[in-house]
Length: 311
Ligand code: AMP
Image 1 (cartoon, helix red, strand yellow):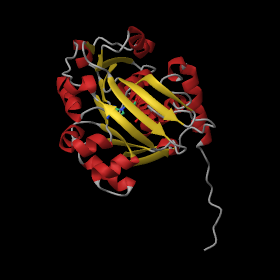
Image 2 (cartoon, helix red, strand yellow):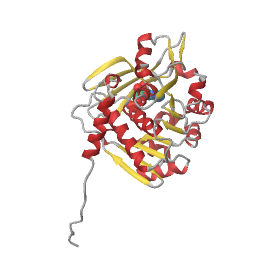
Image 3 (cartoon, helix red, strand yellow):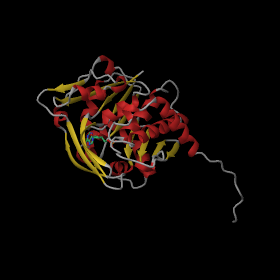
Image 4 (spheres, rainbow, N blue to C red):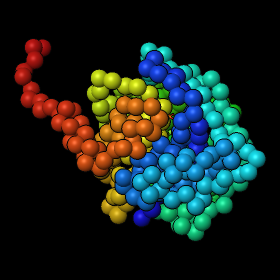
């Protein structure tokens, strides 16, 4: 098995109440790959400018991620995102987005990337997601993430690609905006009727919900005393979730397995937010993930015996 991801590879400039970074490695594909590489071999499809140094490339390739399909374009600059968080780390202000090299990116995939079993269309222009989907031979699982910018500016292309994927991961607000349904369940139901089998609603510090035709499951975020920078938490969640599902492709996609996948995504995301950008996840060990998933299982379980309520 292997996983191919297409999405942004970025320089992020981020300010939170706890500090700032002016040029840190980020991007949806970057955060996804670092997390998913705990589950499988990952190929990244994307592009960077000639301001992307060998050291940046080495950081992206931490944990053995394959970078043959990352094109370095001379005379171009790397995708750049600037964002700022206030005390409510659940919401952020995007100060600027510069597509730069991604504006003209025409992906060509190696045979290995094309033949992956799992394809993750991380957040980037939907037209680009569609092109990569068309280049892939027959992935057994295709998952997609997107954001408000593309819902507003590229809605038709986004709908076209959503119809062709198995799993959609969006945050609550994006789900409502996309489907124009105010209730989370109704919004997820509408999305399921467009084609996908699985919807994940990301809810920041409140966790994530899983909605399928016959199941609902919600898990809180792993409780942390200190959150430093939530940038990339959604993509890191996706890496854990999709990576885990990818490891179980030979069995039917049941709700029990999907619940465990949510727990893995949740555990990975909780490490991501403990430090800026990829700083924590690049030092992460597999056993730390297992421990946190076990702890999540312990703190979310309860037994219920009816006590005979007064009528
Ligand atoms: P998340 O916090 O999981 O939503 O992911 C944040 C990452 O997405 C950052 O590292 C950004 O570089 C990247 N990003 C922000 N805006 C965009 C965009 N319009 N298209 C693609 N990637 C983006």
